[in-house]
Length: 145
Image (cartoon, rainbow, N blue to C red):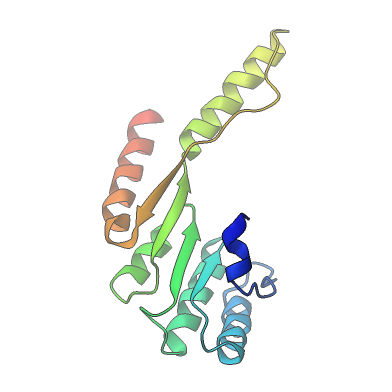
């Protein structure tokens, strides 16, 4: 995690079985036990992402806890106006899918394939999430024709 990791207290990861209510319940407990919590990173599907935003809101921490998410989903748009999301890191899922298909095609043809394929990611701040979502929808509509 780098040299700066020693400057933070790392809490137990939340295991929520992809359930919004469970991620909300567990994060509310962590916020109560750690009132100086500065940031949370949510990695999962729309349910847990919603639960994290609900926990931040219910604990009155909107705008004071940085919340970083992973991969674009329209769910993030619901948290923008209420300061429940600070930004996201998004993978280029279209490019990932295309790379997989191209690699499978090469393998089927007996061609050599690489062991590693880098995945580009993009940092999107909260104020850009809604517009970014529109761009993603346009990308999928145009590139999947």
